[in-house]
Amino acid sequence: FPSPAGPGRAWNSSCALTSSRKEAAAASLVASWCTETTLGARLAWEQQLPLHRAAIFMMTMTPPLALLLVLVLLAPSASWSWRRGTKPAVRAPLVRLGARGSVARKSVFASLQGDAETLGRGKLIADFDASDFPPSWPYTAADLSRMDEADDAFFYMQPRFVTHIDDKAIAALSDFYGTVIGLKQAEGVARPNVLDLCSSWISHLPTDAELGNVVGVGLNSQELDRNPQLTSYAVQNLNDDPELKLADSSQDLVLCCVSIDYLTRPLEVCREIHRVLSPGGMVLLSFSNRFFYTKAVSAWLKTDDIGRIAMVGNYLHFAAEWESIKSYDLVPGQASEAEAAKGGNFLESLARALGANLGMAGDPMYVVVARKKAE
Picture 1 (spheres, rainbow, N blue to C red):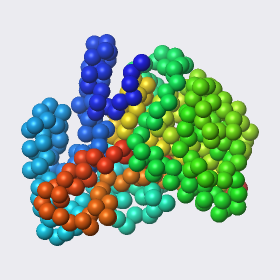
Picture 2 (tube, one colour):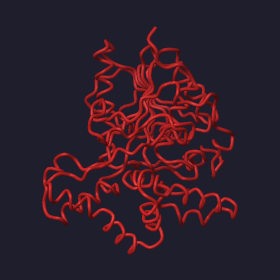
Picture 3 (cartoon, one colour):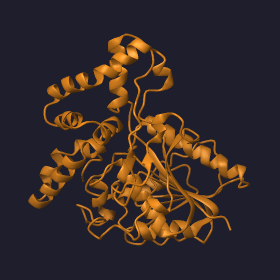
């Protein structure tokens, strides 16, 4: 089985593919390397000048030269930070949503401007409306195909008692879950019922949360059995059978952590999510830039994180009518205010600029949140 590696680390794994698939994998990697590794590199790729794009691409080819180019490109902003004693100014890039992240509809990553709406620690980066979606379902069977079409039961036969995102992303997601649980409790749901789709041995729910039933649906019984937060679970492959064995309007929250990219029948799964949610219930579909490369659907591999936000928005929009669909950045790709206030000498400022712009702070974490209309 392949190891869980982000596309930026998957060059060698493509050597095991057939010739035609190697070409497809290489084309996908070349097209989206920067947008699938770190937030800072993605922003530079989307927003900066051609020279910047060339420099970032060369990072995959010649690391020593790449480091020199990065130093040259970031030195002006780091020098500005050193002189002024504050963090480098970061332009909010005008990146657009659409069927595959290409239709110019809405500016996202507004969180970089510092005045974005927040929900707990999450900063709003997209508030979808009807104009953000194409007129019809935009994905073909090929878009939802995978390099490895073997039975998922074989792939997940062996338990993996590991976490697929880093501690900072886990903490941010758990905190966000806690905020949403508190929101539901403030609305009068004292102990929300939770459905954890594509569940594993850990659900990342806050340990002190007052919850009702927590139902897990996953592919490995050993992982599910070890999850202390589940009150019950079912082993079910949603790609074979997307029908949830739950009553209508029985769940207050539905979660799916870093697994939406593996669903080959996302429209049917999202329809089922809508069916089992109670009026006013919420679904939280979270993802990062790490995944099993051979098991993620083709369209996911061929776009960047902006496009992936759009994809998940499309999944929900075409599945049902929602009161709202929004996306939040849980680990914004900037130096923290505390770090920014440190000032320091040129090299220290440069190090912080490198960390902020090249994503050294850790894994990005995004969540698309949809609320079912209240009756």
